[in-house]
Image (cartoon, rainbow over all chains, first blue to last red; front, side, top):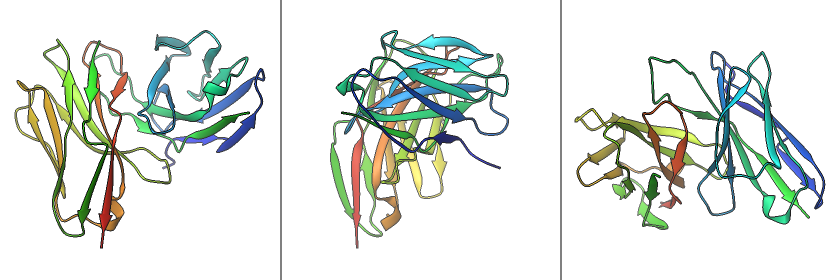
Length: 116
Length: 115
């Protein structure tokens, strides 16, 4: 059973460019959350997707957008890249059930983005 | 807004010894979930243990156990019989029970296990 997968593993971009990161959830999971982890910090919540819609959003600008596909995989897009966007981007998947809260999130290996 | 505080940036322990990592949090909610995740140098965030706030019994997973003090809003992780493979960053995380599964993380504790 494959866990959460992310691609690419590493990425180098220049300021002003756009980037797309991809995530495939763990089998049986329907919810995808994205986190940004700056060097030496804990992950910060960007947003969460469920049923192809953004369900919740953290304190990130509109330059950060996402998408979820019918097969539950997801993309994170960042436009007009800034140096400060350099970070590890983590995807986490979980199962949403209106009768079950606090579902554990399982993380992928992350994509390391460097903006020059 | 909920916050999670890990006051120990770094800890070190020798193999086979026991170490305790501290975590405190702030919330006005009565029910919630707490997690400890491990992030080794390979970067993959791995779940170590979880605790439901409505459960009084402390969670245990093999060599890992927690001391959950709800009134004090404290959630420490005890690692017994430390192994070299336990070397990693450890993050404490909080999740609300109000519907959205968003994790709020602390800043982490770097644990070094030496021979």
